[in-house]
Length: 150
Image 1 (tube, helix red, strand yellow):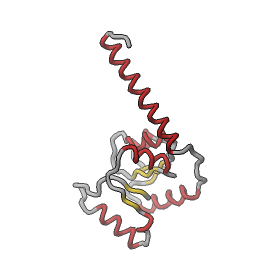
Image 2 (cartoon, one colour):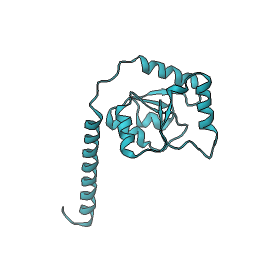
Image 3 (cartoon, one colour):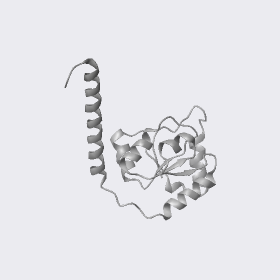
């Protein structure tokens, strides 16, 4: 399991440390890698190469990582909160307060055949094209609103 981002949360400053200690106590520590804060292109590459995106949130705004996974065709394991169900109804869901439910979903995901997918560089190229197309469409919308034609 690859983890990215900060390890501190003002709501629970010891959460990350406790989680990693629990993994070590169950002899699972070697299965976790924390990369810290990484560049956006690396995030996209990781999501594109991942077997699953795991998002164990208790609450969420519209998740950009879920959108990235959808755009790259990456299956997802998401906490069962209303927004995740709305945003990615085809995902595997688990109760956000149940380590057992998450473990069951991880086992289930591990037993499914791996998806044949394009290389990360192909996926990133497609994503860059979508971003350019979106930017062009947004610019055209603004120019039309001003009465200027592109």
